[in-house]
Amino acid sequence: MKKLVSLLLSLVLLISCNSSDDSDSNPEVSTTFKFTHNWDGALIRDYNFGPIQYVNAHGESIGFERFRYVISDIVFTKANGEEIELDVYNLVDLTNEVNMEYTPDTQIPIGNYTNVSFTFGLDNEDNAENYIDLNSASFNVPEMMGGGYHYMQFDGKFINSNNEEQGFNYHAIRAVDNVGPNPTFPQDTFFTVNLGPINISNDVEIEVKMNIAEWFKNPNLWDLNVYNQMLMPNSTAQIMMYENGQNVFSLGEVFQ
Image 1 (cartoon, rainbow, N blue to C red):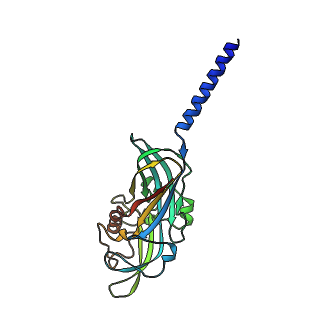
Image 2 (cartoon, rainbow, N blue to C red; image 1 turned 60 degrees about the horizontal axis):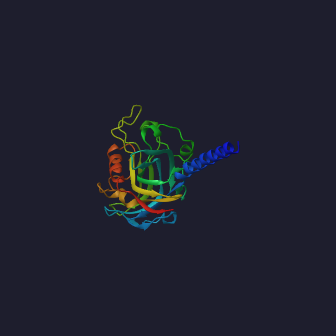
Image 3 (cartoon, rainbow, N blue to C red; image 1 turned 180 degrees about the vertical axis):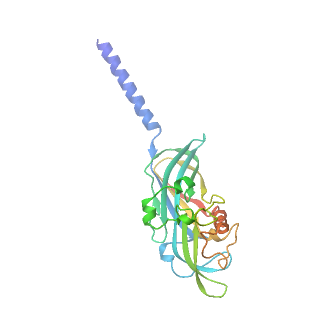
């Protein structure tokens, strides 16, 4: 009888140890995304807004008055191709330095990830949803332009070709034609940002850098004298923004 009890206790301990090993072999950790902004390397904070102090690639002197954008659908890709997709979004507001750090509720397993990515803006499915916080932030797009939400609102002023101060509204949305009761959409203008491989071994902070100067650079040299306002119903301008946005983001420091 004692031998039977001893055998049973050994089995219980073995099962318990194996269960503990299984749970500890692939622990999950928190990920925090820290959004920083620069102008060709010069850090931009909320206190840099107001004065005309930057020069874009086309040669216009500009200043910032508002800058905010939404990112969504964060994806962690494993070496075997498996993807962990977080159906989330975050409205980054540099103007007031709100949501500059974002920690999704969902934790992820530690490991080597071949790529970490997110969507700039909202894909068409997400853009059709109703977000109370984006509504209250007046981030909506009028129904006559397709509804949904902005991807980015970048407002400021510049010195135009007549040497006069003029406002600009560099607003990114879903590209739209035939503005009115039956708008059409020539192409998608949200895009995927690939940060590249990251080895995650603990709770991690991932810096996402945006070079704001790139919105005016490549491949389209942006002339603010031509494209300054009324850009939302201009599908040509929206597609140019989409193209220039491909070079805006990069991976910064990774802390863990």
